[in-house]
Image (cartoon, rainbow over all chains, first blue to last red; front, side, top):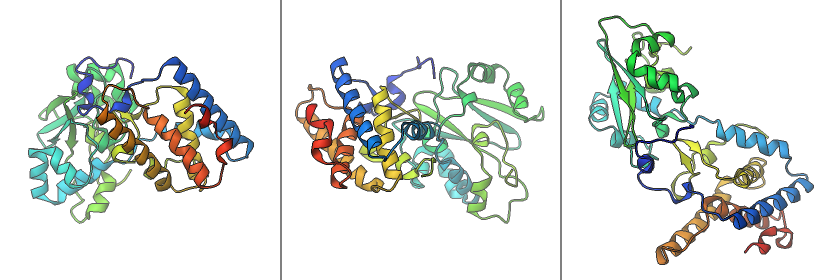
Length: 220
Length: 108
């Protein structure tokens, strides 16, 4: 994320987390570096860790996309009309009903795909993303090309993702902001009528919840 | 040891939650990354349970929050300083290190 955000960086996390700002002086930093280095050599000497393992471990956590909690939200909405109504009306509390929190003051808005309307989520200014429900953003979501082109040529973008929509389908683009994060409620695919909630969860992909794909009736 | 993220660690909630920006872990300096890795690797090797480490972290952060409320203008340690202190505590608690082996006495 190179360009950190001109549309309200402070509002990115409305309840400010004091631990997101760097606060150490150079002297403190040096002392902390030494402290960690000493600990590390001590533990390496004891044969408990290797430098290589430490590097790899950090990498796995930094690249971990996290759970697709959104898939559970989608599956619930498919099988429970009352839940779906609450979700589309006011998504933040509806999502919290399933135990997913972690949103820091941002509101979630869920937009529903129908046979006549297809929704696409973008963040044109940076890469605001509903991470408590969708995990980490995919690399393409942060790329300038996707961010700018989604707005002017959403059909072209969808086509590149392998999704060609009929001319009769209206495409709506939702630009995420510091305050509002969007998620798409994809259409429940035909042929899934007999499936239970858990089976349905497995069908829902991150791409479908961003609107660059449809949900298929069987796991790819 | 498996090199896949432990969900209990990744999804820690509440005051001890890992600092994240738009979902991505925030490390300000290289030592923070290193401190993160040390505590996670030893946990994943089974030297302690994540909860045991996390309880120390919650206590450290809670104490700092309380002190912060009393003197809001003072500068307080960052997340990974609390992390480091918690790590040293759990190392001693589990007998992995002795207090005199630890470097913290020089920085406190």
